Length: 133
Image 1: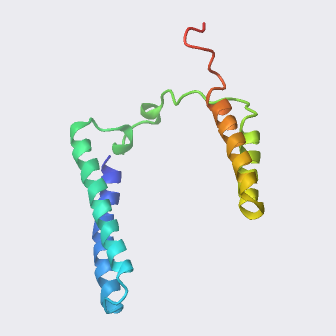
Image 2 (image 1 turned 30 degrees about the vertical axis):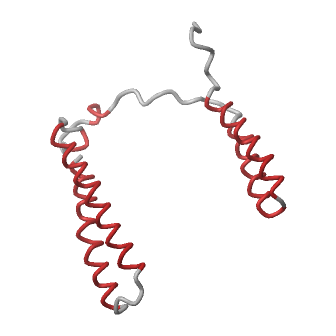
Image 3 (image 1 turned 180 degrees about the vertical axis):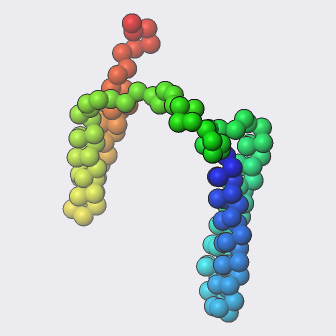
């Protein structure tokens, strides 16, 4: 987690001076830019602090050790469906929703209903019940 901590920590020291510079060059007449950059610096500091705090409690990952072998990071990444037809109706319903934004709201409602059905079908594609063997 060292890389992530340094990445977000560095973002704090980049966005805060940029907010001050932006405010200086706009003579503080445009308030949204400096405030947004300062909030971005604060959020970057928040995430960086969280990663630093959590990284102290955990063992080093293989990504943190430059001399770690490739085999150290291998493991089970989960199950991925080799062939699924559910992305096709999901994409069609998404296209229907975006077409409905241009044509009419009634088409958006139809597309959302079909999109919900396609999402449920995709999520539960391999579900066979609580006690399936």
